[in-house]
Length: 258
Image (tube, rainbow, N blue to C red):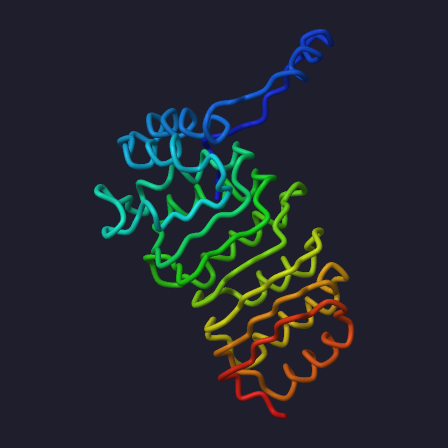
């Protein structure tokens, strides 16, 4: 995807000016996320959602987890966000350092919304937990389309994610395996339950975990609802011998040979 809405600009700032910025403190709600969101609504020509602004201004002073379901569910929001309406919010999170957790569930993306999410993941440096549960593209081939999310996190040298939930989401095994093999943070949780992986899908993913020492301190691994054949089982056995902190391992409905 071509990220047309941001570019790199070289600025020369005097040293005394930089010293004054060191003492700058942003005391606005969510570190100015509302202002950024409103500005990007103008950019996308999308109306500002009052519920989003009200919630960010008043209900997140002690909560660093942003659950998009709060804004997309018709039972929780008077004017629920559509996936397209979420574009400026995703984009704004790319430049925001307040939230450490993002939860997105039961959402179908169009290409433009996916692009804004991809751009956010290529920029954000504060999220440590990411949930993309039961998400897909509206167009066919969602598994391959979502691979751009993993590519974005791989390209982001400041990506801080240590907990990833992809439950009920069909993903491209090669893209995910490549990302996991290159993760630079010590992961603590990985949820791939009900991701409909078959054949050698889980084998390549587990092999990637085994090849990266940053997964040796994993505490929670969920593979429920995926087919684990003999080869995947062998790869899992090798990986588990390396893990030193695993507390929860979930393997129900996997047909794993015991």
